[in-house]
Image 1 (cartoon, rainbow, N blue to C red):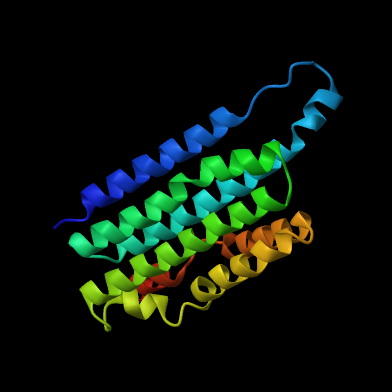
Image 2 (cartoon, rainbow, N blue to C red):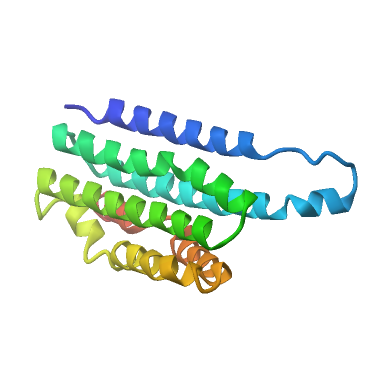
Length: 192
């Protein structure tokens, strides 16, 4: 099967997820700085989630650029990733509206499962394209892909001690991924 439909569908789902998140942001009722300041938790949780979705979108795009074809397993692995990402607006809204241990832990849980789902998608693509494929070569040992779910998992119980610490971990993981993954781009450049 050709990969174009999978790319288009994934792009559409991610665009809808971001749209849902921004619609959750409500304008302040008053026209003063205090009213805007009261929206800070909602806005900060939106920014964090927007960055995460941007990271997933960028890396998903790079990953699929290296793929030549897809099969049923890849389609299901991709849907698995999109399922967890589709829960981001709910987790974002909950974290932004009632910042506390359980919303911060739930946010981390969504991030753990999204990270695992992305890892499964990568491994499924490698299995379909072979261990000597451009994807396998570019991904390599994938340290960031393996350590991210581990850091999220550490942040979940930490949320019950102090949710600010778990959110600091979420920000840290976003920072290490913020620069788009250049491994696949470098593979293309070396082959040209």
